[in-house]
Image 1 (cartoon, rainbow, N blue to C red):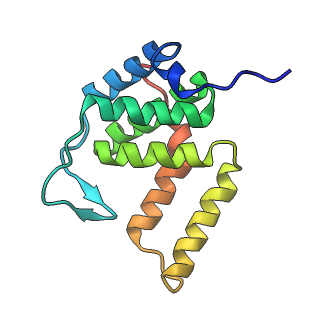
Image 2: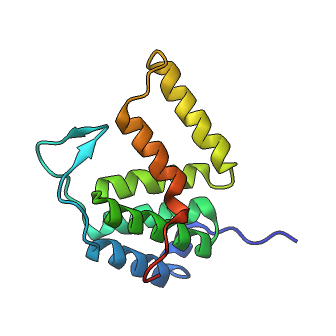
Length: 147
């Protein structure tokens, strides 16, 4: 017997409380005011609205199809962002990344990502690429305070 899939209309009904709870955690998190995109600081911060948080978390839930997994991924990324002094833009990008690799072999995917980055840069890996790899590699080893 197959489990029913989570559909977009359910985000506003069956999963509304979970999504709103996580969005409030994100909105209240002490994140960096600095905004970086691909290693470069942006001249103007990107404005995030509460609806942006709701949409990003809803997309993650539709991708994982598992509320507990969505909450674990979200809290791991958010806790890591606070610990590392990252911004909301970083949180959004990392939630997209985690949703993309959900169900894949994590270690293999991270190695593949690193190899592809190296091959596209003539074999050279810069510090920012290695930092991102290490952040992603250790994300779920960080204690989950206040979950």
